[in-house]
Picture 1 (cartoon, rainbow, N blue to C red):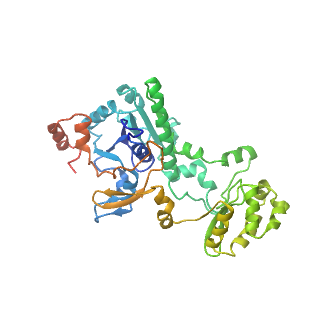
Picture 2: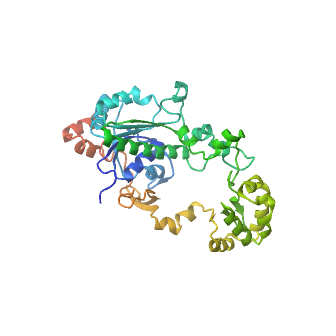
Picture 3: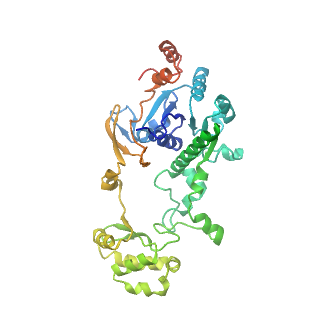
Length: 404
C-alpha cells in the first residue's frame, strides 16, 4: 500500500516542539523526513524524561516527536555544510524550520535565496510572532508559554478568580505545528496545479488567537472581557466538571432535551420548570446558582453510580482520566493510539500513535526516533550520491558526524 506522501522529501531544520510536530505528521503520512541536526543535536535530546542507561540521554521528549525520521548531523557554520544544504534543497519538496526569523537569512537561506535554488519547494517557517511582523515583534524570542500569555489564552484558563494558568500541554507549539501541516499540504496541492512552491509564515500567537473559540466574539460583540471559568463553558450550561461522592465527572448537557434527561436522572424534575433555567441562555446567565444546585445532587453518589445512569439516558459525560487511566483505556488500545517502538539503546518504548486515520493511507508509526546522526552517511550516499571517500573527508573536517 502506498503512503499518502510517499515520494515527498522534507528537510527538517526544526528543534524542540513546534516544527518537529509538523514534520512528525508529514513523516507519519509517508514523507521522507531528513532531520538536520547541529553537532550537539536537537535541543530536545536534552529534555527529560530519560530512559535507558544513565548518562546516555535517551530523551523521552525527543523520542515522542521524532519517529519515522532520519537524522543527518550537519555543521551549518561551515561552508561545506551549507553547500550540502543547498544540494538537499535542490532535490527536496519541503523545508521546515522554527528558528528566530533572522537566523535562516543570516545563513544565506532566506525565502528569496531558497526559491532561487528550487522554485518548486515549499518553505515553512514557524516563529512566535511571525516573520512578516514589525521587527520589534519578529525578533522577540518566544516559547509556548509566551504565546499562551500573549494570545489571550491564559486569561481565560484556570479557576474563577484564580491566577493565570498555562494549558497543561504546550498548545502554542502544537497548534502551530498542526496548522503548518495544513499549509504545507495545501501548498503541495497548489504546486500540482501550477508547478510553483510557496512560503508559509506560521505564528504561534496567530495560531492560538485563531482557536480562542467564542472568546473573541464575546468581547467584540458585548464589549465584556472574558475571564477564566474553571471547568465551565462560557456559552453552554450545564457543561462543566462536578464533584461526586468520590471524584469528579464532566457533564455536558448541551441542549434542552439533555437538560430534561439530566433533571430526571437527578430526581429534580422541578428544575425543568424553573424559570431561571428554562433555556440554555438563562442557564448560562444563572450558571453559578445552577452549578451549586447540581453539585449538591451529584455529590450524593459516586462517579461509577452516576456513569450507569448517564449511559442509559445517553447523557454526554466523562470521568476525568489521569495519564495512567487514559494510557490503559480500551479505546486508546482499540484505536492504536499507544504504540510500541523498538528504540535503539533502550528497547521497547510506548509512545502516542498517529491520529490521522485515512481509509487507504493512514498515518502510521513505522520506525523509532533516530540516534543523533544515525542516517548521515545514508542520506549523503543515497540522496546526494556522495562517494565513500568524500563522506570520510567530511567527517574529518567536522562537517558531518562520526558514524554512530
